[in-house]
Length: 205
Image (cartoon, rainbow, N blue to C red; front, side, top):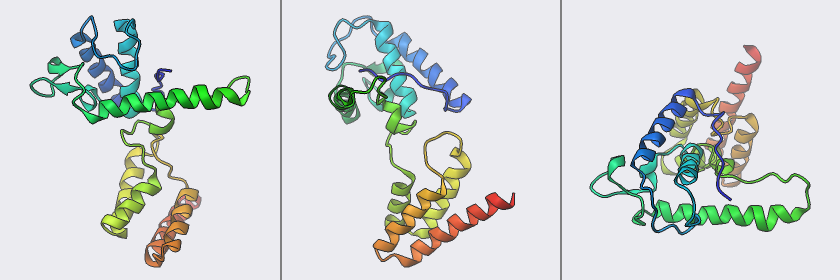
């Protein structure tokens, strides 16, 4: 099942830019397609383009994320049939995975109106759908706790309303517990203090 388009949670400027990029890509898209391995070979140009736009919005990416350029990365130079990029191969595998989840698992639960999994269900406009805790834990391991706290504050400032990350207190509590289990007491205390300060500001405002 193809990913549906859902753009309500995207910032207006992002929607506009992705829409313009998609329209420009459509103008460069061929009328006949070769090397279709997931979509049916009888799919119309309009339907295929609609699905490509859905991927773009769901992952917050542009054509060049999956499609290789013949001589560069300009849209007019896209080689849409090429399998050069691993991201395109991954996309096919992910689409088949989504089909399997919806058709082989969710559909067999016997519910009258089952909720369908879509690309945006996990990606939330992120090309790599990492959780906030995963990002912070990775930053602590590769850099230090101060870098992780700085990352959290930057992401919270710039992305609080776009639904990409969970900025709730529970998320930080879970990260604190994980750090304690790894004997990272200093880092756990810093995350607890970050969380406590955020909660205090919320109730004092």
